[in-house]
Image 1 (cartoon, helix red, strand yellow):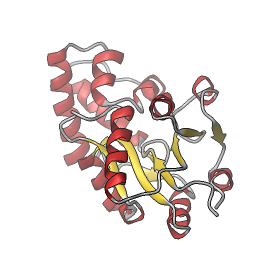
Image 2 (cartoon, rainbow, N blue to C red; image 1 turned 90 degrees about the horizontal axis):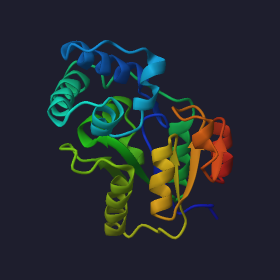
Image 3 (spheres, helix red, strand yellow; image 1 turned 90 degrees about the vertical axis):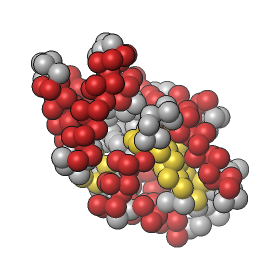
Image 4 (cartoon, rainbow, N blue to C red; image 1 turned 60 degrees about the vertical axis):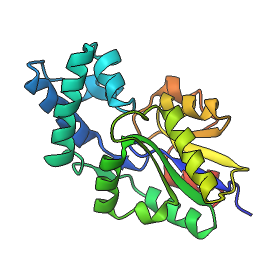
Amino acid sequence: MTKYTTILWDLDGTIINSSPGVYESFNHTFRALGMPEMTAADMQPLMGPPLRVSFGQILGLSHEETEEALALYRDFYLKQGGALNCELYPGVIEIIQKSKAAGITNSLATSKAERGTKLVGEHFDFLKYFDILGTAANDETRNSKIDVITYAFEELQKIDADLSRVILIGDRIHDVEGARHHNLEVCLVKWGFGNEQEWVLADYVVEDAEELQQLLGL
């Protein structure tokens, strides 16, 4: 018997290392707005939150500036190659394949918008392993991890998924907050964009794909 009936998967920092394309897209946006570029280390806090949070709350842009930044970022990310400037983390897709073969329901739970998610998923051909694509809305009306999980659950219920034992696999504090809101177990992976302060808040922390596979009982 498998340990979990349904697994929710974060995408950026968990399944794919999207940082090269995301950093490239942020700096393209900063240049276009006349702002100074940032180093990869300085942009680390921008990995994970919804874009409006990154531009508005973290970087302190006004509402108008945030909307302009969003448009610039999305154009570069979706149309000029930023989204595909990424790579799969070793072994994670294989775990998702094994969980699907074991009869576990798999759903994405990502703050990446549906457009970007499908662009990357089709490029790497992994969408077929997910029963539900729990993504942010393209218009950003649904983008927080809490809302994304709510949406994923609504879609999972439509296919009569077994939600008796659910775990969320992610890498940042937002994954922990989303899981706690929905009373879910949460595992953070160390290969993503999180840090020690975030890891201690999770139920489980794994170093690599092998540890994750053992945790999931696969």
